[in-house]
Image 1 (cartoon, rainbow, N blue to C red):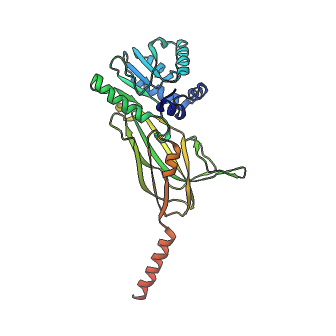
Image 2 (image 1 turned 30 degrees about the vertical axis):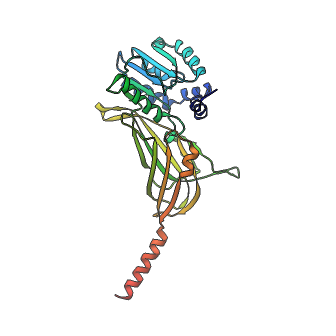
Image 3 (image 1 turned 180 degrees about the vertical axis):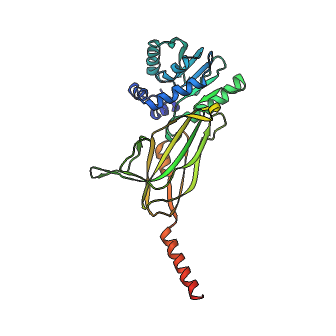
Length: 313
């Protein structure tokens, strides 16, 4: 019988089927970003650990320069698949695929780089933050410092107010949508610029509670009925070039329970909270947006004030 965490893992994605991993292999932005970052971060002769290895492709990237790579995977089907695929590729023998729980596994020796890609938009659903925090505590207890280099090194999360079309051939359905960042969608209108609500540096202790309250100056007239969540992964910081190697997740657009009419110049207050690794519905339930300053009301008040001032001039 599965324990509570194993049941949650089945639901949250650690047991994603093989065909989904194949889709990830075909994501050129993801693959190119990780390959470049791993090539930069892994030095010749390094020891590398990957937590949540899937097909083993990121471990294989590391094996090009590393002396040894430990690839940890919890799903027994993926363990078999990874071992089979690595055996087909040069340097695959450098990768040891370990059937273990990333929450519990530690390598038999200190490592130089840790790769972990359990990433969902907003750090929801998958266990990136919890796995990394657990690993850091256990690694320091066994091996002491310093900690390895983590890949990704950091995550920047932002939010943006939208007017989103929810008409599907006449059927109104306000549902969660995922969109390609580089694509312009006719049914999406940005009402204000994105605002960063959280930065996570994986080398530092990270609180799994995420809460934010902030304001947007609306730039266009429309109906604020959705919020876009943006997650930019800083895979590696290239200090000598003062640049970064990044990977941008698909945008996640969440419908608001209570849409509001807005005009250019309005000030809207948005608030939400959730737990890293938590469900999308938990974020939706906490998501609020309210017009704090109505530009038309403000203009009317200013006009009235001017008229009254003129009477006493």
